[in-house]
Length: 278
Image (cartoon, rainbow, N blue to C red; front, top):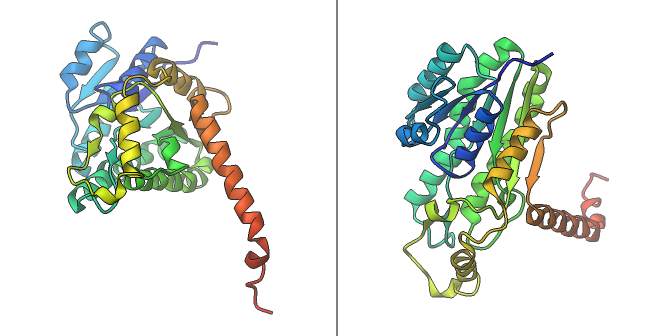
């Protein structure tokens, strides 16, 4: 028996993974609510899908605008099945170089906007005893790199809240998936904020990351179209994962990081076990 079409609610859909996720969902015959700072661009990208595409401009800083967008989505398509928290951007620089304003704004979009969206959709999911929340994290939510520390912190936050969230909502029939890509040819580095303050003492560490970004921009191995299709296939599978690494580099880096952690834990196991009250 053919299953009824799903309704996706996807944030950050002007380009990159967001746009490709819209494309992949529409290709399945599903309906999509796509939020963007430029909804006209989204509509122009998918001109033949107006009956299944609702493009909205939503201020992700505003709880009331988010709640209104969720209500409009449900009124238009009758339901939301899958929320994809994709909106976000990067911040590159040493922690000492980054301004308070830059740090707070990064957390506003990468963490608090994600929380606002999730909290707005959860009552609908709980009522239906179904739904799926997909949080786009990064391999930098599992590992860290000099020059990306604040961005790492936002994605580590996404990992932590997602791992707690799945325990809260799984008994209610709601799934959670965290997507951890690395090295995809998107506009991530174009939209990333590079600090204007540069401290020479960090030239060998943070400067190395800036150099890699400049060299590798738009030469990454990952195909956003294939990445989006992998996400859609995983999310709509019978047993969707909590963690979905995307790209061979993501797998390699994460496994090496976990192995290094395990070796360090084992090396200090005696000290670890020495702290109980005797």
